[in-house]
Amino acid sequence: MTKFFKHIMVLAIALFMAAPTLAADDFSAQVDALNGKSFSKKIKAIEVLAEADNDRVVPVLRAMLGGDLYALKSDKTVVIAEKRGSVYLVHKADDGADLGQMAKSDIKKVRVNNKVRTVIKGILGGLTLLSPNVEQRQKAIDAVFNSRDESLLPTLKKAISREEDDALKAKMVLTKAAIELENAKDPETLSAALSVLKETPTPDVRSILTRYVASAPEDMKAEAQATLDAVESSLSMWENVGNLYRGLSLGSVLLLAAVGLAITFGVMGVINMAHGEMVMLGAYATFVVQEVFRAYMPGWFDWSLFVAIPFAFLVAGSVGVAMERGIIRFLYGRPLETLLATWGVSLILQQAVRTVFGPTNQDVSSPSWMSGAIEFTNGLQFTYNRLWIILFALLVVVGVTLILKKTAFGLQMRAVTQNRPMANSMGIKSGWVDAMTFGLGSGIAGMAGVALSQIDNVSPNLGQVYIIDSFMVVVFGGVGNIMGTVVGAFSLGIVNKFMEPMAGAVLAKIFVLIALILFIQKRPRGLFALKGRSVEA
Image (tube, rainbow, N blue to C red; front, side, top):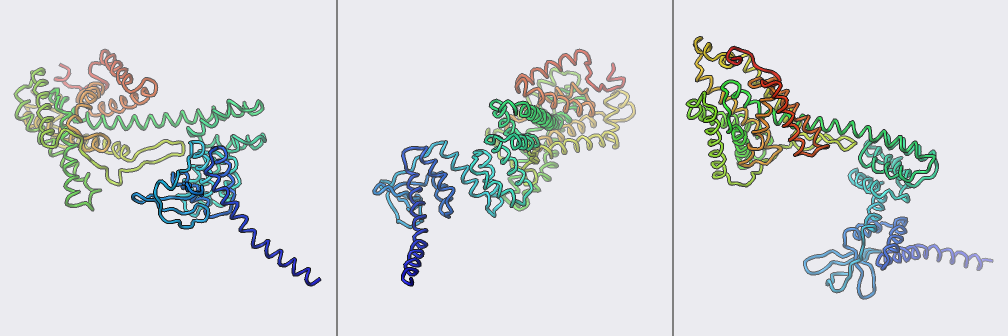
């Protein structure tokens, strides 16, 4: 009896010691199966490996996905090879044993196709869902959501129960609902999945629901269609919010470009075709300031825009005063000659900038506080640079309004605008007012260039893009009226962005232009016409 128990103990110990060997042999066999000719068998081997409790699974699958999985030509052993110069550093895929370096002729790459890659991405996502690293879990849940492999549901449920990050947990719950909707048969499970998807209206969810509605069983089709309709409605609302934001953003750009023109055009009646070049000079002033900060104060680069704004105002304003004193003051009352003269100045300024800075675009960077965006779960983004430009445009309008309403210069400017002969008789030097007004309008255009440099290419042709739109805004809002310019800029920007999805960018601009022409036929002085004897004469 004692010998019998000894034999039993020996046999048990032998089996216990043999079990890991058998498991290791099975793992090696599945790794070698990755080099098979059939892609379907490769996928089967990948799925078996995913169920194995082995630390080598993730490195093997990552190597296969990244194109680093090879097989030895001598005995077909699957290896992971890393290229170093003209040779490869080779390790066995199943146990990581170092095989030294080999030539390219000694190994052959394991082939994969798109279907295999999709399966690997989904399984890798499932294997890393329980990672302690938040970024890895984020990438993992994205991969699982894209693959929506039913075999990952148990791991996904375990990850949901452990997840502490609320946003990541919500994405996991959404992914679980998407997988259940495509694979479950139980009506209760399908209804619960539809409820979860309904609460997260995104383009991806819309695509999932659209496919499901097409193949849904009859008892679920009505509920699925109602869920799809609710998601469509919510997405439509958010798309309108996005269009409104983009319209306000475009309107703020038009406002910055047009507010200076509204002042000069309103006070002096000068059609300044070089106004766009004032915007361009402001953008290049920003480039110069940033280059100085990069060279001498790189640690203070985030403050460069606060220096660029007054510098651009002084540069563009000085050019504006020089242009008014040197050319325009001799051409008052001769609109055609003024138009031709300012157009000539615009060409001179463009060529001067090409000569100094070159014809190519210049690199103007955004500071860190203008980078990034506010992201919503439905994919909508509010970029920080656009938000800052909207705020900056409103601050400029407030500043100009205060100058016009609260300063002696603003009082004189309004007097000259409403009745120039009477202003002269009251002792106001209308020539000085004209020069300073032109300088103010040009300086504001220079500040617009600072803002535009953050969202557009800085090139000698920058101003030409906005000059026509600026005149449209001024004419639509009312010549010389700041409030009219604000309303006109935001109205044209919003209408344009709401029409673009339906008609395209080019046709939208054409329709807006046609509507503006028809509007001017009814109201030649725009939305808010100035009043005064000279204006009404």
